[in-house]
Structures are given as structure tokens and as C-alpha cells.
Image (tube, rainbow, N blue to C red; front, side):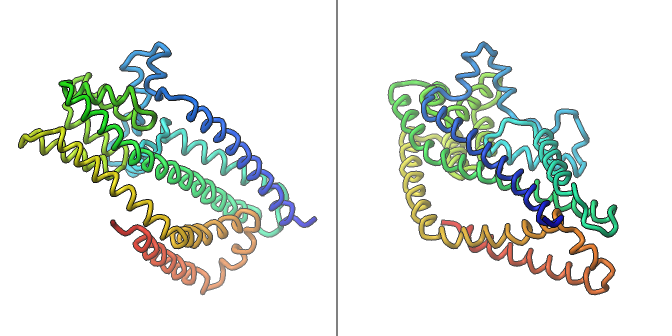
Amino acid sequence: MSNLSLSISLVLVFASILGLGQIIIGSIWDRADRHGRINRRMRLLDSGLSSEEVFSSLKVHANPNGAPADTIWLRILDGLSKLCQQAGVATNPVRLVTFAAGGALGVWAIAAILPSGGNIGVMAGVALIGAVVLAFLILFGWLRGRQEERIRQIDEQLPLALDVMTRALRAGHPVISTVALASREMQDPMGTEFGLIVDEVTFGSDLRVALQSFAARSGSENARYLTVAINIQAESGGNLVEILESIARTMRGRHMLRKRVRALSSEGRMSAYVLSALPAGLISFQLLVNPKFYTDKFSDPIFWPTVGCVSLLYLVGWLMMHRIMNFRY
């Protein structure tokens, strides 16, 4: 067996083991979520933790060490922290980056067991770049998938939560009590998110500020509409019950329209995903298992201008596909 075939086999075995483990763990988590109605915040409270500890554990902190706010590293961590919050991953972003870097080093070590000749140092560096790009592409794809799934769940559950709030408001409860009632009745992620709103108000924050944090934390457009509507009602007055009922009807209509649009555009979206990920994935995989394929061309004067032109065309194509499949409705 050649060095390239052996390296590809080892990488595929490693990826298969990771995929199988993710499927097993995901099925266990999904089964536990289907059978468990109590949301994550309530489970943490029942375990004996205080409200402050629960609130701190459910918040993702991007800057635990107090790094300067103007550093590029902190801006990257802030963006990753926002993505983790919207994906429902209650993990420090630094840990995710460390995990991805460790996975990249593991894949690189497996692929570099048998070098294929040439300048070992250059090929090892190129293979390491391919392993890092591949690992972070997988991490970003996983987080984006969880983010989209969580936003979809919030959009489905938010009208039901508003129904609970309107019934409680008709019974005479104050607004924050209706939010607390919805947090106890709803499953995750809506139950935990409403529970965090209650915790923020309990710790001294204003309800409107807590709702704005919820909208930013969830990434849902419906959550932003709800926040704007409640803020306008608090400033100008009006019947909050009727406003919430109207918002719930609008959200249900938008959700049904979104499902119809996604069904009609599913083929185009899948084509865009494949065309966006396939070039970067194939180039990274080639850099990982056979870096000599590219290192031999480094001295060619036309190589780097070609790389720049191809990268520019790839970026333009990605932007065009992104605009096509992310139209507003």
C-alpha cells in the first residue's frame, strides 16, 4: 500500500470513529431531551445550585481573563461566544478552540506517519495548515448547524410561550410573573431562555434590557420583534394582551411561510452548501494527506497569482450564493 493510500485510510478511520461517536452521543441526548420535560435551568436549580450559580453557568463568557477589548483575539472570541450562545453550547469559546486545535494536531499526526519524500519541514507545515483548516471547518459547520436548529426551535416555541403569557395576563399576573410561568411550562430552549430573563430581572436588570439580551443571545428575528413590541408598549401604552396575541399570530404565519420557502428552496440551499464547502474541504484534505502536490509548485511564478485569483473567485461565488439562498421573506 502506498503512503498516500495509507494516510487516507488512517484519516478516514479516524473520521469514521468521530462520526460514529457523535451519532451515538447525539441519539442519547435526543432521547433524553424527548423524555425530559424539565428544562436545563430547572434541572440545575433542582440539583442544589443557587440562582446566581445557575445564571453564571448558562452564560458564555468570551473574556474570562480580562483581555484588552481592542485586541483582534478578543473580537474573534466575542464572535465565537455569540455563535456558541445562539447554538446553545454553554462552553467557553477558548475550550472549543483548544479542542479543535487538538483534533487538528491528532489528524495531522495520523496523516504524517509516513512522509512522502521531499522537504519534510515544508510538507509538515503545509499538512498542518490543511489539518487546522479542516478541523475548524468541521467545528464551524457543527456550530452553525446547532445554531440553525436552536433558532428554529425558538421560533416554533415562542408563539406557545406568548399564549401562556397572554392567559396569565388575563388572569391578572404581572408581566415578569407571566415570563416566569412560561419558563416553567416550556421545554428547552424557550424555557431556559425565559428563565434567564427572569434571573436578570431578579438581579436588578430592567425587563426591556433583559429582553434585548434575550434577542441577542437567541439570534431569532421573532425574539427581536417581541422585544421591540414590548418596548414600544412600555413607552406608549396599550393593551399588552392584544399586542402579544397579534405577535403570536404573525409569528405562526411567518413560521409556516418559512417552512414552505425552505421546502421549495431545499435543493438550491443544499447545492450552495456543497459548492461552498467542497473546494475548501478538498484542498485542506489534499494539503493534509499529500502536501507534496502543492509544495512542488511553490517555486512556479504563476502559482501564487493563480491562488489569489482562485481565492477571489471563490469568495465572489460564495457571496453570490449566500445572497441567493438568504433572501428575506
